[in-house]
Length: 257
Image 1 (cartoon, helix red, strand yellow):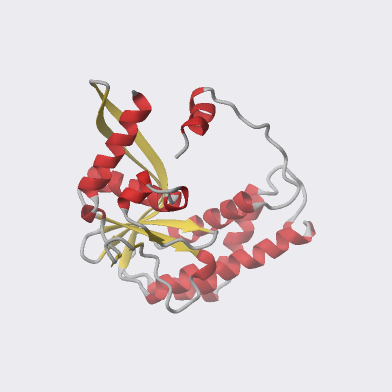
Image 2 (cartoon, helix red, strand yellow):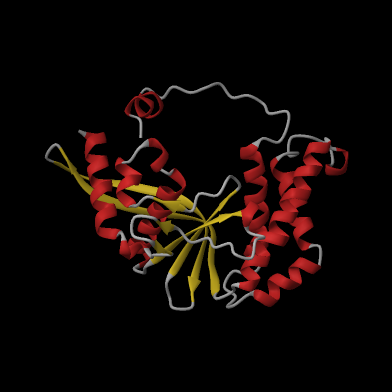
């Protein structure tokens, strides 16, 4: 998106100094949510149509315990302070994360349980071939997928949890690479890259899904991407594969030239 920023960050490797956060910031909020949901969904991994188990977990206090454990491990791990003795903002975050999980993520999945959790916090990788300045390369792409589901028709679904403002529609694949700054949506590009890596490594088509947790309590919520250019919602990666990989090769060729 920005060649100068890429140079400073990835070539010159300039870094800002680390600072100790006195309060829970946005990244830490996401860390707590991810750790809690990983613990909870690890319980249903491999279970076909897990609605009953999810509904039972909502009633037993298991969600509260998972969130509190996530806070203790990721925020209070260097302190002797207990959660009940911690600053008020941390208790507020606890309550918000619990609400997002109970009324949002888990309630949504219980209503739409046509899936089996295949893996949580799973590394996906693929060696992507491209050519730059007449030289052939194979670049290892990798990332950690929040969750990988297997749908009833055998298709995979890559789930990415997001705590920010929802952005589920995009202006088409080409705009992700060549569009104006507002059209180059990193969340959409990220989940399409994960879907690409999964489809190649697993030999199955993959559907990208974004779980914007703050909006999942709404009955009309859908985690599926909406392509404004094609007027298409919920398309699997195979619908974009040829053009997406052509644009990715073009971008990598420019980086490596």
